[in-house]
Amino acid sequence: LDSRNTKAASGSVFPALVPGKRQLLRSPAYPGLSSQLEVMVDIPSLDSTAGQMLKVLMYFHGHGGEDCSHAPPSLPGCAIIAVQCPSCVSKDRRCFWFTEGPGGAWNNHEHEKLKRCEVMLQAVICCVDSVLAALSMLKLSHGVMREVMLVGVSMGGSAVLEFARAFPTRVCGAAVVAGLYDDTQLKPLVKAIAHIPLLLVHSRSDAACPFRTIEELHCLRTDPDACNGKNTRRVRTRICVESDTKEHATNGQSDDEAKNSILAKTEAWFSDGYQHNPT
Image 1 (cartoon, rainbow, N blue to C red):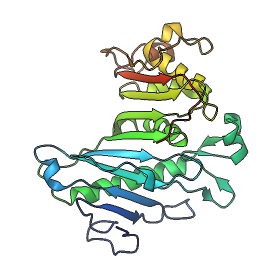
Image 2 (cartoon, rainbow, N blue to C red):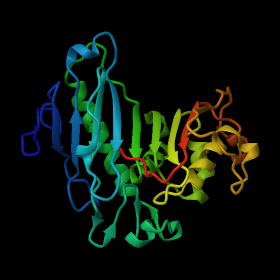
Image 3 (cartoon, rainbow, N blue to C red):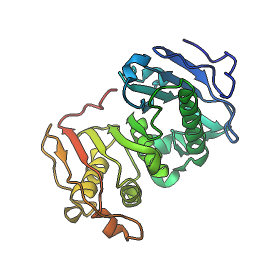
Image 4 (cartoon, helix red, strand yellow):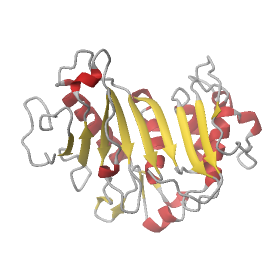
């Protein structure tokens, strides 16, 4: 259902949302962005939410031809939000979700030539808030969860980690499929998302997004004493590895203390091979 040119409903920036439908919307203009963001919202039927709050999953698509239409369908009791990542924030400013810089630097993982794209982070969280407000107008008997679940593949996996780091109190779970991240930023990332359950899916010989960074992230979450950033321990092929829940807070702690204060579970679905995991 293409609702991009449909008039906004009273009290909302979006047209009225329709349960049981997959709708394509256009968000209002955001300062600093040269174009409006397109948003796909897939809402389950109302009877599937009976007796529970409506859950919301935010999907981040990958690079190389993917768009928000690749998002999975809604599930009973769970709506899907997927924003379309623009190729440029503004003229001559390339962006890759929440990272901006030269395209060659992105492709070659030259993180020192890239920086965090703050305007995209703020635009997307604003868009999410607007969708949640529109969902609330459906008058569901148990309401809509404010915290969202995240899933992303490849470039979208990087977006999941950056979004969770920027807005940790707004995220209740995250899944990163064949993702990537700046190695030098892993420690502050781990500290910021310590309370968020995390699933990591990756092939060990993935040439597009190197495995070593995700392996180190897993190690920092589950066994920081064994991880020095260079010699991370192997996780058994196709075996789910889960960290224990701990009862410590990270506020006021050093990075080393925070590494040992992971509040949430971590699972790793690592496999041998060269496959850059598809959505």
